[in-house]
View 1: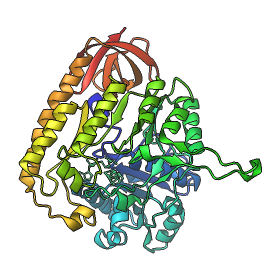
View 2: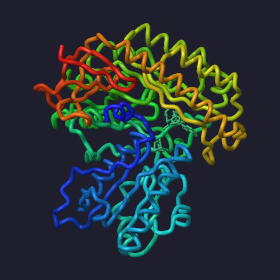
View 3: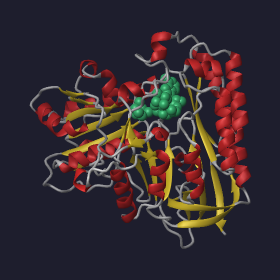
View 4: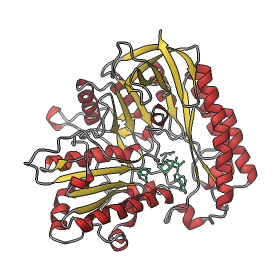
Length: 477
Ligand code: SAM
Ligand code: SF4
Ligand code: F3S
């Protein structure tokens, strides 16, 4: 379990989590719904918005899909495999639907947006298809579907942020929570489907973010992760408040927002993800430095170590530029945890390009890396402009080499922590032993330690005494 937890922040391989935190015995609900989520943290956060909308409209939640009148699957399109997983799951729901006429199946999220009506043609027995910006219309769509119509709304919006909706925390440990600060992406990396499935970038009202974080803290949460595809380009300008003389308030940058969240309480830890290397500023780094409760950890995806490939990927930085950014982070915040995303076998990638990716990893020595082989996505810039010409076996061979190299770095990173003192926020009981708890340190590493009198939600100071590649082991210091 602890090993798994290191991947919870932005790993779109998370899949199929339902939840169990709601009463499902109350008879007064109109109907019961069940949501299963796939993809990145933003999709999981969206499922919490969907749950809030449905509960607000009289539906009850259930953690058991066999009891549900409405089954929703919140989907991911990032790679072909992610879509295949969803399709497989849908065939299982289809069987259930045959035995339970009247039960509705709805597809939400990025795959719904990508395939639109085609989904209903391709996947018979899907009744509702709703894109990421259309969740407010779900209650009406359910009514339509109940009358036998196929209900589809995949309109993308330029301003929907669901700012006023208080997410219903699903599968919550009661200690850590995701808070969505923006939606969409304007970057157009050539391999990526997200700009097409999530639409234009827009930032959420800063006041609503602060209120959500404050409420979480008052409810006992101790850590918030501010989420966006590109958090460093967060920018919010409030409309002038005419009742207060119409003065324009100062705009809120990401550095300012981080500061505002950090100031809620020194006992509320703040994380954020994802940072695009081109947008993270010194201001953000200085803000991390200034506040103890902002974790020293940056997820800074590079994707490739070859400037030529980076240019084809439309990442807008070179290898040298990225290295300079990493140097700056390490200069200002020497103990900063650093993680990345990598793609092997992108169009035209040569062995030499691949070696440059490995040497960049050697230079950066990431604490954590999410590595994938390139999967062409229909409609993306790369699919339209370039040939997917690296054979799959080569993509996979390069990926395996990369994973092997990263294993060495992550083990070295863990070993460097042995003997150090760190502060850990306790997230729960270790899966391996009732006598042990686990939590994460500032750098997002999982630490397991003896329970003693500690409990979930406590901050505990530990001395690290040993490690594996995925977990640190500590004792009270
Ligand atoms: N916004 C983030 C950024 O700029 O890095 C990441 C977004 S994406 C949800 C997460 C990761 O999936 C990417 O960083 C990339 O490594 C990977 N990815 C995206 N499209 C891919 C594709 N077509 N094939 C393989 N991996 C892909
Ligand atoms: Fe995709 Fe690039 Fe946007 Fe990240 S920054 S979501 S990789 S287009
Ligand atoms: Fe996330 Fe997958 Fe969509 S990674 S933004 S759920 S395509």
